[in-house]
Picture 1 (tube, rainbow, N blue to C red):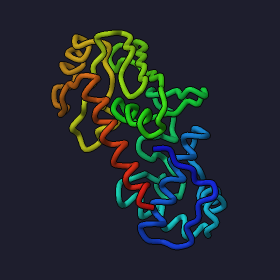
Picture 2 (picture 1 turned 60 degrees about the vertical axis):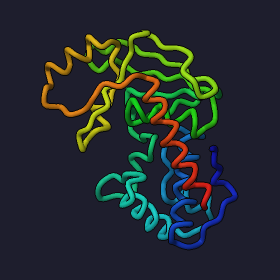
Picture 3 (picture 1 turned 90 degrees about the horizontal axis):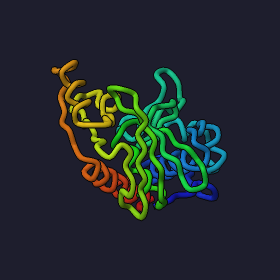
Picture 4 (picture 1 turned 30 degrees about the vertical axis):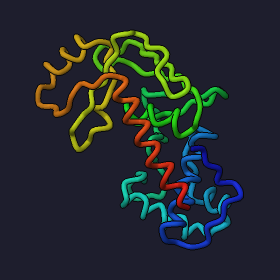
Length: 207
């Protein structure tokens, strides 16, 4: 489900205001590949900047996004990252979006309702990994043996990564035996993205 914050209006707080602001944040990421500032959101939605900041903090408390500590700058909003990462999704119009982890990239084809090209790197050897998703299905994987480590740590995003093979995942596991998590196949990661995107879309549809 795509969203468009231009022309939307939210002149109060509460859940409706939060949803409108969250939708505007996600749409700005999609259009521009970067997070909007509170003043930009306020201008788009025709509200005060104080209302935006109040709702951004509420969204952070809900776990929908993260602000830079001590500021109102948006660091990330699931699934997008304002900070460059090795997990990049390219849309058909050429836009390139940074995502937080190897599962978050699979939210994007469903949130944007578009075919995407995913670029990342093996967390063990840094080899390039490329995945194509068309019509909601994986249509290309290079290298073909690519798998995902689904971290179960509380700081899971930095460690939920692609590996170019089970062997390289095994070697990394041997170097970090205490790291909780499990290997999952790409189809499971895609399904996780589908479910996560559907949840976000339902939340936005209620605004």
